[in-house]
Amino acid sequence: MSEGTATLDVEQAEVALVAHYARLVRLAYCVLGDGPRHARAAHTLAQRALPRRRTTTDGLPRAQGEDDAAYAWLRLRVVRAALDRPRPPLPGHRGRNAPARAAYALRHLEGMADPEIRRLLDAARVRDPEAALADARTVTVPVHAGPCALCAAPAAHPLTAVRRRRRGRAALAALCAALACGGLLGTSGSGWGPDAATRAPLLTGTDAQRALEPDALVRVGRNAWRHASRTDFAAWPARGALRGDASLLRRALVTWARPRADVRLSATPGTPQGPPPGPPQLLYAGRLDGRAVVLLYDGLRVARYAEPLTPGDGSRAAKDGISLELARAAGAGTAASAALAVSRGEDEVRYLTAPWIGRAAHVDLLDPEDRTGSPLARDADGVTEPVPLPVTQPRHCTRWPGLLLSGSAHLASRAQLYTDLGEPVPARLTDGTARDPATGPAARGRLARTVCHLPAVLDSGVKTVSSWEFARQRLPDGDGEAAWVCTRAATWRGAGARVMTQFQPPAAHPGRPGAVTSRAEDTRTCGPHSRQILTGLLWKSTRGHWYVLAAGDPRITRLRARGTGLVEGPARADGNTLAARAAGRDTSVRLSAQRRAD
Image (cartoon, rainbow, N blue to C red):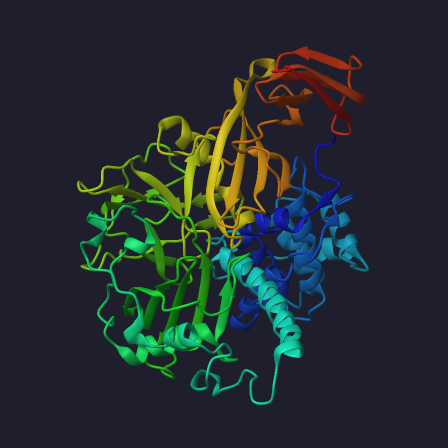
């Protein structure tokens, strides 16, 4: 076990990109030079820095005391890419070349010392790092401006880069699947094209044909949910000012049955993309943020169709064009069917709430004390005012909005907490394997230190995110008490759950993310059927001493650590936590445990 990881996977890189996006853009902008064109290029370089597959992080040049290998890898990629693009010098500073600008930025923006800068420039293939350092020392700025004033790049939303990357991969996979299916099923005149929506569906028959008829849509009355035996999406009434617009509804239905080639189609993992088996249920049809939006439900999936109200007017809605999103929603109970994302922009989202929701509020999940939140105004159809999407700043996550929903007097239920993970159905946030709402003080405290890791599960079909504390440990050298937390992101399809364990030591800020010690995918671990956990990390105390810390689930009765770098040799401890003195950051150990037989 070592201080960093020997390899970097795509999810870790995405988390680092979200956490440090503005920092990376500013660094690229400073290396490229000033100007609007360079600002756009800086965003492009930061977004393209993500790896396509797992990669090594060995030998990365880092600043003194820096332990974020993922960010160090992205920084090197951004600097190398910026240096490969010839750009004019910083304005007003006598011909500074790109390597000199890079050295200047690394010194003033990243706080790196000259030896560290020299190693990074060398890794970025700069021919003469020493000359670049010398040239950077001669840069001057006005007295009233700080040294970073030369590198003030405009900001953008960091989650957009991750979502665009993931949807690009999904679109490529969908295209390959479409090509493969076209080879098997295609016949003359049956391919996708501009006129596909006006042709007959691929499947024929009474149900398939009726699924295209607006008059056949299932429409539930406004008060039907009060008497329904089940309160889920099937109990939602048809709402919205355009619910009687037959032309709009037909376009939405035909697009679902057979999308044209120019339609932006997306689906959560594991969601079938075919047409509905029969007439679906109409949930909503209305005007929102320059778009006509239609929400449909076929018992298995929620479909969100959107088209611009005024095509060609240059607005964001017009540029986005026509889109169709599909999300799996089978088996949704009262809590899971409390809201749908009905309109999403670059930095905000609106929700359509269930008819039984009596109160909607916006909370900051990074603030455990924000228990009741700020009330959200809703229109007559139950559509909320815009809720901001998560926003991050350099070095730390600064805001992660959550949605707090409470049932009305007609349906007594506990308040539930949700967050947007880029899909039509918001993810429910729960505490422990019992699926209790994550609304209590302890649960909110754990959640505040977890949510900044959630970019790793964006757009992956997450139904619930559950966290529970499996161990507490008194830290050496009087550094307080730490919590060991397991977090499980379960999906609507059942398979593909993602799990991570965290070490959460005392922190000055309640929203400081915990350290991820392990990750797993498509596993039962950390769920209601399997709670066997064993994890650890190398930790440095405030006194400067290194320790191997380990923890396991409550059934563990003894822990053991063996390997190189342990000061007193193999370490043993009774119970489910262990702390062993280590020689330094190069310590490498193997952990083992004994559990109770019951």
